[in-house]
Image 1: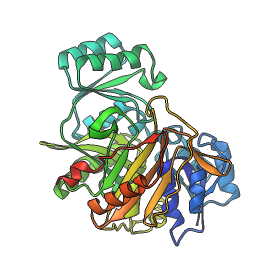
Image 2: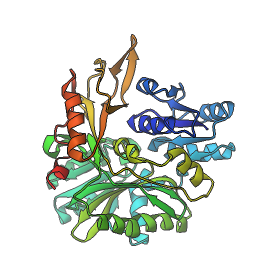
Image 3: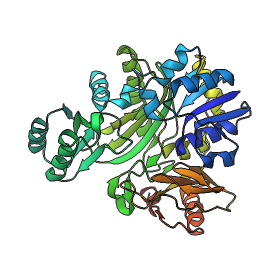
Image 4: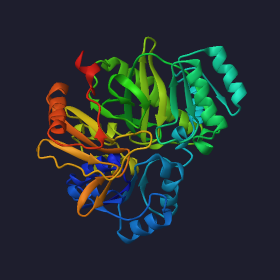
Length: 418
């Protein structure tokens, strides 16, 4: 097969690399990709993810078997619909189905209609009405921009003052533009978070192994929310019964509810969940693979990813199998991230044979990779257990100079206390 992965981040690097290793695959293109992917034999194509006509023309010219749309923005912009209208196969939800991520309010309505456990909420476009609700409910409370905000549109407010500041930034100062013109104010749920992803084709749901992401920028879960600073799989502090309950009460009803809604879902459904004393509840749904979860979940997949997606696109039953090994990944970010950050720092070369480096915010300068984004790269390793995988990653990071960059030193700490 000849395949096209659309996107440019660490998630797309992990997807493209997994496909590249597949015996069913002859060639993987990534558009626009990034220069770090080239080291894994992935051919990058200078086409932007919003250049629908250019991507379709390329896919036809190269006789691509199917395209995999990685990021949320092109899904929300209807790239899968445009591919299908051109007679091409693309794996991912339609524009209508991608609203499960593109609108927090839409997702909440799906959950309420289908009795999917989640926190209480209300949606607002008016600051004074939202303020009155926050004053009534108190803190902690969660403020979410309704639309896409690159993983930065969620504020977990520990005080009423923080909540009102977040509301003001979104509804009065237009911090996220149209994405924050409507906000969801949500009950804060206490418990252990985990990510449960699944391959979905209409009502059929095929769960993956779970992982845990670390959203806060700094050690001890301090600092602002980011797109994710590291992840690991498995998550020993989440019992298997909780995962099975989540599949039965969250993923399967969501897939069925999307059909009933007239917006059937095909693609990767990501459930960001919290293990509460009342069972698993939904924090958020995404319409695609998570980043950095993908970089630790896909290495555990022992079945053919290309075969799974081909089967789903053809309405056949896919075969999934997973390694018992543990995977562990740590993100290296540019100083200042997720605010204003530095660029242009030279990236180190890793000599360890048993780690993988997934590149995200990078550029090439004079034949060398340099930092060109907030989250620059992720280092991942496998081990017989999490402690072994963790040691490999942190030893690799300790062996190089990372000027102008930082990483969390406590990824996986909760799991290793179990």
